[in-house]
Length: 285
Image (cartoon, rainbow, N blue to C red):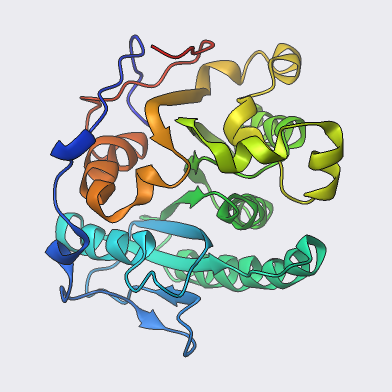
């Protein structure tokens, strides 16, 4: 579970964000592809894993040669060799409902791989799991978290970066997992200038047409749902990123910052420094 944060105090990385995508290129542990399109992959590693991390990309463009989950796999291999990663991209289709069916299969494959790794551990030292996702990958991340929890695997942290998830449904399910002791904490990352998720949140009609996607990344946690699940509120955090757009947190120039200042602290590997999440309602600075 992440360190308990005090007051919300973000620091926008801007041009000082560390490293470019090339800084970790070619490092060992980049992943063993499960298919020619590399949409599902996992890091092999030489250390017995004590923490499994599922990393879920949104819709991937052909121009993106080196994705943020692939960067993350390299970063974990260098920084914490006992962490094993499992990556997947969101299947793209002009029909969201068709994409939902294809992505159900992808989350099933990833959760099965992670479950097998947990079951292979010695009972005296069981592995934990965490899930990180961005945009449409939030659908994959939530599905995988659900499968792991249903299989009895403890999930430490769920990190949702600009997630395209249905606000009330996702808030309710996550709050229920926390109240039942199945999920340690959830961190919602909200870029201020998210015009992508903002399109979904325009009206109930756009939300209906976008199903199974939603506008959690813009709406924030549902206060109405949290009023019903008040015990979970203290473990459901928000990080508000001023002046950032939908994909900026995971862009090449910000990835080292993303892992060192946001993801690693959220998962409890590092203390919070430039970012401090809040459990209260957050407004733009």
